Image (tube, rainbow, N blue to C red; front, side, top):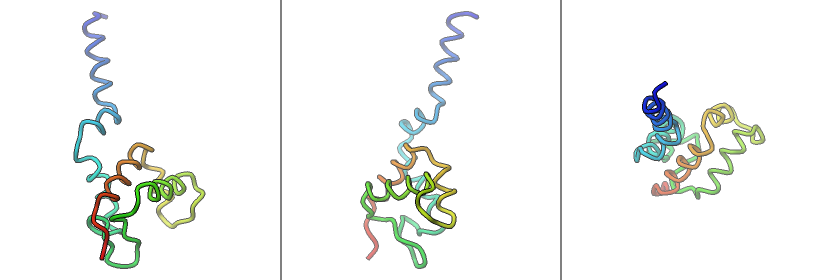
Length: 104
């Protein structure tokens, strides 16, 4: 294989990796957090039945999500949902919700 072609292919693989995509897309934290809206409300402000996530301390939310992911925290759908996120994605989601105004 031509060394230039190999270098271009390698660059393409690296640039298309999930980590590169997370670093390059400023809207990714919001987009990941939007998947929580069905239960936890738009912007993380629940309208009832589920906990509001807006304004939750990042560390607390990361800890809960990691417990769901590890299977050490009970839940109905959250253990399965949390397993679908990488640790980096969980960090992005928690950071985004922590920055949102808390429900009043």
